[in-house]
Image (cartoon, rainbow over all chains, first blue to last red; front, side, top):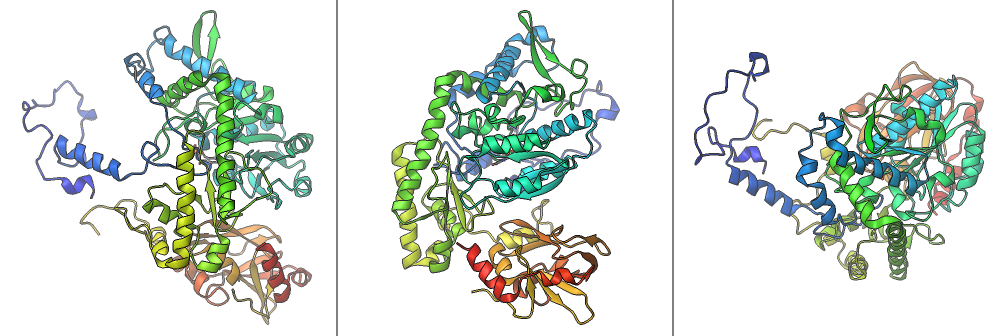
Length: 484
Length: 131
Ligand SMILES: Cc1ncc(COP(=O)(O)O)c(C=O)c1O
């Protein structure tokens, strides 16, 4: 039920409070609404109940194991939230004088420095507000770099076929042509194809390493050398940074620009389209193009650098300091972990994934790349179950919901048929991992004995199996109850 | 097992090509391809009267699972597109070799067509790809 369906004309949220007076006439006419806002006429209690109930129907990291591959759904420590909600932070006005925001700016400066240290890049800008926006920022900087050198012949960005859809979309948004390069059956990039694809038209390459197949590309140094020799730059999609945190640095692999999804690796609240943060780090040669504001230290004061200080900057991505509240949470998380802690994050994320992979293999599931060690995530392919039992990856995913597990990522990456991309993260206990493994086994038994129960899942949730075909073909984004 | 028609040519990217009597070609995607992709929800057709080189991406098929590029099997000019797919993309699932055709082309040179796979070669290729 939508909140508008609770509405009754004339009802307000303050039946018991004093009547409000007329609108003060000091507000100029031009700022007044012509029509009342389209808000539901509900009481405060109705609004609270409505949203509390909705939240209870939801799957969340606070209530469920959430092994959504590529998304790093780890626990968000309460302390990060508590500290970031201090009134000194919440009440700071973004337009107030820098001298009044030194505490906040100190945190932001130190976050820039810590991210630099963790990734091996030369400088970081915190401005982008999502991984995808970080990608846009990165490729826009690559473009600015080639333009500044008058190298306009570079019109192509290479993207592996296993990449996340935001990679090619980003390249196209920045005016580049996308050239797809194949991944070999062992999960590494095909160097022969890479060699053929490189040339004076190459502006750069976008790589995710560890890749979305859950393996670390063993030829990364060679890839990096080949692309640089051809005059291109390397973009690092940091979605999988959690796997290598504290172990290997993208800067050392030769990358020129990277984005970090702080809502993944640095554990800020994640999902539902909520605020994210996608800071970018760059190598020496891209520093002039970083988006503003940047935070600089001058004596014992911190200040925001703007377009005037950085004339070659690609500009701004938001009015103020990106998603400041998210950045603060990531800062606190990074401070709580420290360098040593970050190393343990990478180690346990990898251990958990490899444990699950080995146990699921024992249970008879088909691992997409069985000869490779998993990074922080791995792929199970359901192609045999689909062929032999008529029960596919989506059916397994939906049935998991009945057993109180959020489903893994399904049908991504596109190059593995019937795939489930499973990422447990470092914050789960062995008991939970074992329960998930047993449940997967149980669902397979169900699929053998009574496939309909799996194919028609979920059975226990408020919303049953959706008709995705109808939803996509008859998309309706402005549904209003009672209006056809 | 999906159907592979004997008298068509095929590409590694799963397009089929039918050579018409007047020398033009009709292009669609194979039964195997539509089966892998699942229910179609949107087809972006190539631009009429536009020339493409062999291997250029010229159209997009989007299913509930994925969006996938369609590549021009040979070099040539697009002379017709299947408008009915705009409202009924499911034709690609129902009749991949019939009413689900995607576009027609005037080939630049006949030679390129000879290089495409025959039905038996495609069958072997599709099977090897599964493993
Ligand atoms: C591999 C990969 N790249 C990029 C992104 C885009 O990041 P964001 O969702 O923060 O925009 C994602 C997000 O899920 C991803 O998994």
